[in-house]
Image (cartoon, rainbow, N blue to C red; front, side, top):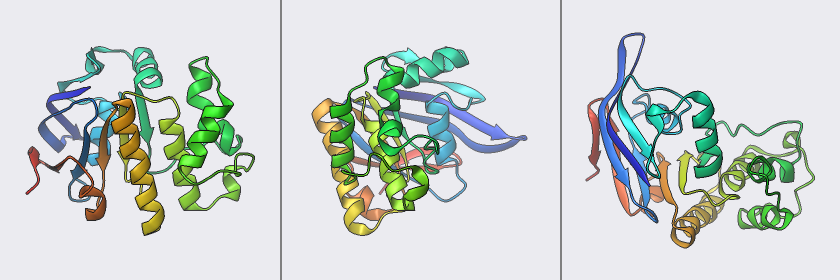
Length: 216
């Protein structure tokens, strides 16, 4: 579902990471650890085609992301990816249900029942008519997770999805991510600092400036 080969990225001539290679199979849940500033979020952005690496290649579901233009990358994200951003990126003028249902709307298949099920899965049932300004940080995080899952994408990229959640809610969110991975056959790459979250993963990888290695 995901293959990254010898990816290198620098900003202003300063390397962020180099020679990053990894692969995820359908149904695999993988945690990515690393020190702050090592480029974990940048790596996710490159995989999603939101940022461009300086060298190396990326494939998602057999399609080479690094060979696509911006419009084709946007179409690939719409069809194949679910992205849980660390900063949420919910739309403030849309209510919770409309934020979560946006991926389905963009695909031309709106489904209120599916939106309701996604909200219930993350514990936000009954809050669909609220605006983002009426929610806490933890609730906004769960909106972002429900939105990333609602269209059953083949690849999930999750950037610290439990960082703003209490331990009990964090466990529930991890359950949802794992269920999506197992039941739909999605591959999930989870960036986290949480050892509790990493223990739920099938594999744990560690990103350094020199690449990726299996964590001890």
